Image 1: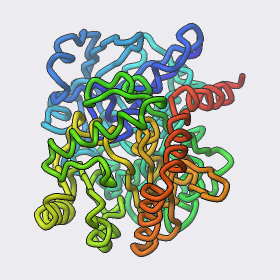
Image 2: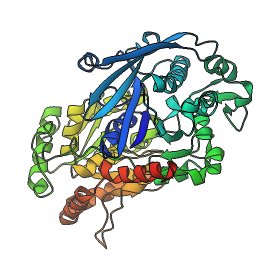
Image 3: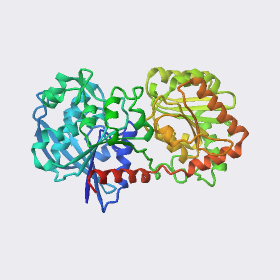
Image 4: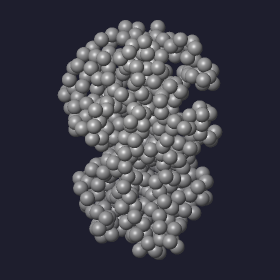
Length: 483
């Protein structure tokens, strides 16, 4: 039996702010239980819904110190089993009691330093010795550092392997060296340019990338992009140096959760056989609910996103007056930077019959939009993987994307001459280029309906379930465990 521990700052269904939580929730369930014992550890946030917290079972507690700023802190361990997976929750009221999992960055850094050391410290107490610890993003970056340094004095930890997965390189956990030494208890020789030092500060993610046995990220193209200066966020040199120990594995989506045939959240269920008749019924119902002109012949473009610079919203701002002509509707769901929230509110006011701005995150409304929209727009500046385009395929909605990261790996551009492709894409980060691709997609939608429907067929036939990616992770785990 091979033992794997996933360490992360969030995990569906307990706590979620982004795609990282989906990965840590879905991937562990995919492995064969006879061969793999995969468990998950996350912080015990007080904002985890009550109906879960009431079922958590107390395992043990002890006290732990890290550096001089973190001394004699309470570490509680709770446990919960669901769908055959054991989840551990590290409990500490002082660190994990906020209304949200993240807040002030200085304070986040302290609580995740505490969490990283606690993850290794609980293993003996819970009587679980993983062969491999799979660490996700900067919040778990110090686990490989602690394992290779402080914990090597104990033979229990010898031979344990670590993988560091980058979900978004933009976030790294950077703070000044003096504070970081006070928090971690690491000696001065770890804060050098070949280890944790980064532009005179200390960098938690960099520590993980230096000390992990292997690095993965969430698509092949992103793995290549982050070795360049433009996408590398200052770590491109280190990532290039480790490129032999690095690969991209595209995320999957939960095909039971996102299934237009059985989805209870959409108005009318349909499948690949019946979408030609039934998908438009969803569109009419959504138009009615959102107060848009009810007309199934309108071209409805959806956008579900964090409203941030990363997502290419300045391109939309540049072109929106020309996108939402009298035949086109745009439906937006998301929250984020006030400038983009207000931008979409403004256009919804200006074009009340064709733009709907839902500045919130509603999972129910999101499912309805996937089932109703004809196309989905993702003009991202960079996109490590992206899940929206994968869910769009599932619902027979055609993605319009910029060729970057996982978007480039998963969306094959439409070719009208060969009648191939699953979506539309543009290469340069440029509003005119995006607009011309959107206009081309309208032409295909209105004037080449048969080819459009065949493109939808191909998208719905794609398999981006976790089963595919799981095979690659299994191969990687076996390789690291010397099999």
